[in-house]
Length: 279
Image (cartoon, rainbow, N blue to C red; front, side, top):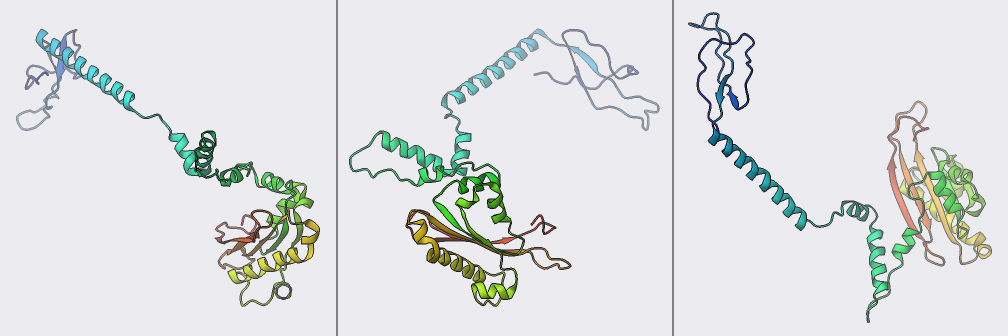
């Protein structure tokens, strides 16, 4: 609302600053430096100019209009803004069964004619307790479930998975056997011949042998209510004086419910840690 006053004239203050009284506004213009015709000149300081009454009132009116407009716009946005559900959306993305279970509760609370019964998938997933606990806590939860029973077969990188279940407590309720056919010839006798040992083909042989052994040997004893599983790994961890690729196959054949046909999950993994212990 105020215009610069133009060039500065008169002697310059040594410090380049001057004290201003109330009602004065300073404007800065380009500084003049020493040059031809300005030998020894110093930078020009600020010039003071009184603020006129009309300028003061205009400034107040404009400031009030800006502040008032911003307040009204903010109030309008708040009135029309939808409820914040950022954390709910995060949970829905990370754990989609939460929204599914909520919908199931709404369906059961207000049943309608011709509507299908709520699915049990969300309830089954929510039964997986302690999702954020340690590996030993998760293993203990499985060990305490007397309907889960199976075997562990691990080749390479130790027997870390079965060790976790065996040391978590109550392992007798879960572990039928744990073995590691580390020698190639012993592995061939146990699971059959294979061209290579760290392959999906060898993993399939291990899973089939372990699961079939459970069904053939202890199904009658355990009964139809027991859900069998076979966990197998064939891994090439970091070897002594070797820089080979560290990778492997991990899989499990299991019954998702009593009496169901077996399902399988298989993963190919690459281990990027520097030592075999970390891998």
